[in-house]
Image (cartoon, rainbow, N blue to C red; front, side):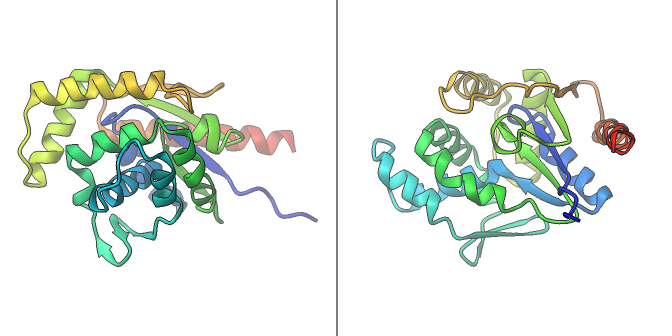
Length: 228
């Protein structure tokens, strides 16, 4: 008898929509592994910045992604053996990550690494193409979004809490530009996966969003059990 497939929940959405917080809490509640795919692109961006690799050197960018030595330990993210959890969250790194994420060879270089996170007892993966490209057969797909105003305010609070300076007008502009770049890129554009549940968190708390995702997962699990 073959082993049952490892369950996967994908939570996609634009920057600062709250998908990371929701995905982490859902994973914790279910006892699943968690993949922050956006962190992989941010880690690549940080590596590229430190090595002064040009955005025009597509081959070098892909190599940097392919040989990314990173690991996750709870909320801490390491590049080699250095904790870069805060370093990858600054806006310059985020903007560069969005630009290199539009390069198909970089996305391909990170493809296998992302798949490797699917381990027992299950995985919650958040990003922009988790449900459309990386895990198209996930048992539950969620597309989580929020207004630019709500996302800019969340991002502002995150940066201030971490001790970084921030400006609401600049953040709103950056988010709008990043949304356009992510949605219009030719490789794995940001969009809701087929059959994904849409969740607008503009007026929701994180707890409410988590509860909704868990409710959808319980329903999907029950439906799957009935079909067996």
